[in-house]
Length: 349
Image (cartoon, rainbow, N blue to C red):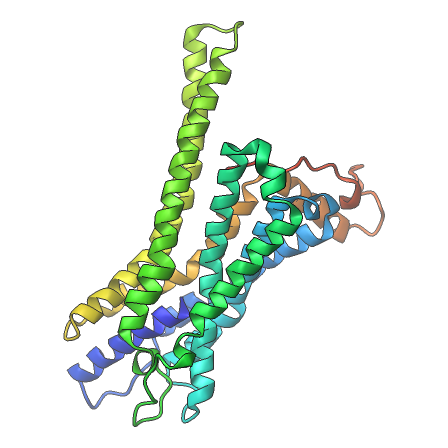
C-alpha cells in the first residue's frame, strides 16, 4: 500500500503547493508517528506469529498454518520494509537515482500485493476445507499448498515489476522520487486497483458467502439431530452459532474493505479529476488505514484461534521459564497437544 500512499501523498503535495507556491513541503508529524506505530505493531504481531508457528511442531505440521505463516511474513515485510520506504519516498528520497527509486517503489507494490494474495489464498483454503472436506488432503497436500503459496508470491513479484519493465515516467526535473511523478495513474487504477485488489475482493466475497451458506445448513442439521433438547433451546443454539459465524465472516471482509478500499477510491478520483484537491486529513487517514491492514490481520486471522492462543501461551511460558516445566506445572510447548486447524474455517472457532 506504500505505492498507493505515494500517489495520494504526491497529489496532496501538489494541492498544497498550488495553494501556496512559496511554502516548503512539511512532513506531517502526527501522521509520521501514527504510521511508525502501525509499522511497529505490524512487525511485533506478525513476528510473534512466525515465532510460534516455527517453534511448535504441531502447528508446523498443519497445512492451514502454511498460509497463515505466508501472510504473516508478507505483513511483517509491510511493517519492516514498505512503511519505512514509503516514508522516504513521501519526501522525495532518494533523489537523482531513478533506478533505485523505481526499484523501491516496486518493492512497495510487491509486499503489499503479497499480503492481498495471501488473504485470497486463505479464503480458498477455507472454502475447500468446508465444502470439499473429503478432497482436502489431496487438493491441499503440503506440496500443493507450498505450490499455491509460491504462486501467490510469484504473481506478486510479476505484477509489481510491471512498472520496472517500462510502464513508468522519468524522474521529474526536481529529481525527487515521488510515486505519482514516476508511476502512471492508469497503472495504479486500471491494473493495480481493478486487477490486483478489486478482483481478489470479489472472489473473497463469493467464497465467504458460499461458506456462510454451507455452514449455516450444517449448523441447522446438527441442531435438528439433538433429540434431548426442546425446540426453543434448539433455535437458541442455532441463532447463537449463526451469529458467531456471521460475526467472524463480517470481521474478515469488513477490515479488508475498510483498510484497502478508501485509498484506492481516492486514487481513482484523482485520476478522473486531476484538478480536485482531496482534504489532507482525509488523505492521511486513508493512508494510515491502508497500512493498518498488516497490523490487523494477525488479530483477525490468527490470535482469535483458540489452538493458536494455547500454543502462544505455551511458547511464552517456555521462553520465560528456565526449566522444562513452569512453576504452575504446565507442559512446555514442544509437548503441547494442539488440535488440527485444517477444519478451522473461521477465526475464534
